Image (cartoon, rainbow, N blue to C red):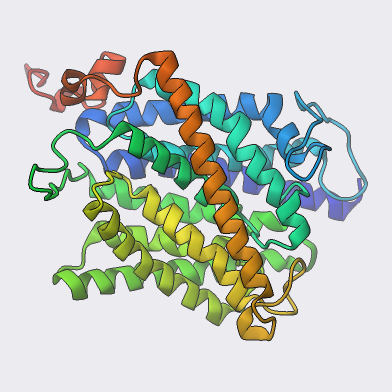
Length: 419
């Protein structure tokens, strides 16, 4: 293996570990955004579902995503075991490790729609089905040489493949599970079931922000020309712009600089730039981040008024903003950077790329939602229901599903006694 190929493989392996570390960010984000009685459950299910995603993606997911097949699905390389080396490019095992981390992130996003009310067994079954049949097919369409790839669909690191796919699965789960107890009143008004720890949520966002450089910059898949630095620059600018825009719009609309909205604004900037970080100029990255931060604020309000209970705002952060991030390529992609597809509307490319991006959004959203909805109905039939009982939900999933609280000393009747 030559020196450049070795550096490429080391770089991608490091970035894969960064993407894996993003799961720690999701643990803190989701646990902090929900109530104390479910914190241990959220942390634990994240770990075992990453395990499930890894095994299922190894068995069939990689083959469906990147195997030889047709425009819709790959049909080879199941039970992946490529240990060969190469004088150039990535070796198979490094490529697999990087890609499986993306599959696990999409699953974690999907599980945002399950929060605080789903059976543990529902997580297990859906994790297997989603990792086998939903995420890999979308990945094949765009990254595996499928039909959207042939049309020139631009999605550098996954605004559609990862974020929109996961969010549409979350939407299907949220609809089928229905709102948490006490979320909405008979008159249609909403109650704020506030998360128990904003510090956890903020730290979770920061960890995700750091991990995102593995997500975006790592998707260069190499170190040639140090282009990963340019991708990182755009990523950082969009995240900062998203956080500021979200805080300012919340402050203007409510009179308070709401912390959860600010945090979601940072994530919105990251999600929005994920599709376009390698295709646009820095000024456009700032605009993309600002619009993402504004969109997430209004999207959160919209879903709440529609009585769609989304405890960690997965639908807004990853879904609505994922759509914007995907479409932004069709506006801002430059001729010099558009190595696939064409330039955006603002760079003389007309509506061609915007049309391809829109088609991709519609196709991915429809497939991910319908497929997830059907798979959740199958899961529901197997289990006799997706949701825990009212009593179990009131007690909390820590105790009802696992037999112990994540904060045992803080729960009633469990205070420490003695000196």
